[in-house]
Length: 492
Image (cartoon, rainbow, N blue to C red; front, side, top):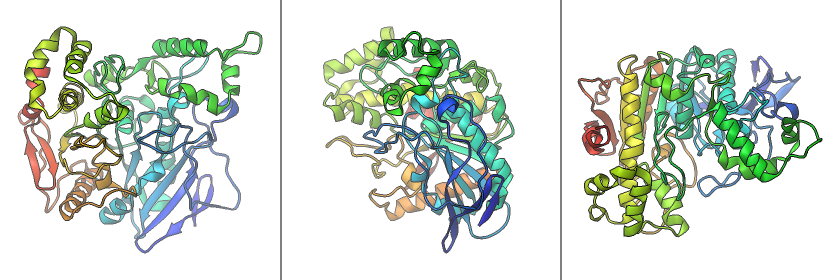
């Protein structure tokens, strides 16, 4: 049993670790608290069982995340801690899921916690229309980011009870969680709440061409929206939905009265956080590139074949594989006048299929370029370490269409870091890579430097040495990321 600032909790004790689940870190965002910044938890009497996860935040089940929920009482976190004492580094995980899906409890952090003697926190935060909604009269656009800040404040107040050091907190996350870390690097309210950052396949500086994620998706020069853009989007889609009635109170009051199930119909529209508000005053793109970010060491990286997951799921997996003619059309729609140059640089017959050709273009133009730009924005001002996860035999987290090689797809590093259940087991070589990644990540959490005894040296990213660390079962060490992903072509 442990004493927290909101009450006492009882968790689970195992041979080598302790697990506490479903701890509320903020008040349920229901009723008038829907679309408000997080409020404090109401303290409880007695001892609260923390032996099972709390509800996921509202979301529709997806092919990549078979989790559904209509429960807004969802602001819970989970703590995995070694049984040994001491003040240990704390690692706070932000899950991915496209901004509409996911939950913290599916990421079992026991291996990382026990092997590396760190305390790991995973959390839920508001998603989709509940986390990224802007409308006139709301302090909106970044409620999910505000929830994550509240997790970090909870850690500062309470993590000592679990053996964690509140003055040594690493924020790490993948995909949408990594994107969120881009916000925390520049958000004033996040200053001092974390001391290192690990951005896994995050994309705060991504410029996504048309059709980058799903067929028909528009070009996105930035993955952030201004408050005005977000409010305009919300007014348009709410108006099209016809949910508001004159004379029945304010628009905000009417929207707060709508059932979760109804609002979830529009949740996929609201996956991008807004800036120009209390939580995120400035565009992360503008702030990061201008050097206006918190000076914490950063470790950042991608997987080798990021885009294959999206092309496999939303093109081939929906019966819309890319054809030779379709490849030319995608290049024209995504890159305008540069389409012919790209077609010469990435000839369709250089890949096994047009779908793989399109995913290769996206790997370089969107994903690798985004990481490259982030590394260059950071490295002169703060210690920066860059990696590429390159195991093309990683077990798939989701089923891929028959005949579509997953490669080192988006999210392929996750089974190496967490026990997620239901996946093909790792080979002996892959388990060794998993252990090495844990050591790199935990060393970075301890000191801001991933290097340590028995590990292959991982140099800092600098202007003089722009190689990144390749993470592969058969080869760990510097790789020429710029040449592999044709950065000279994409940055000219």
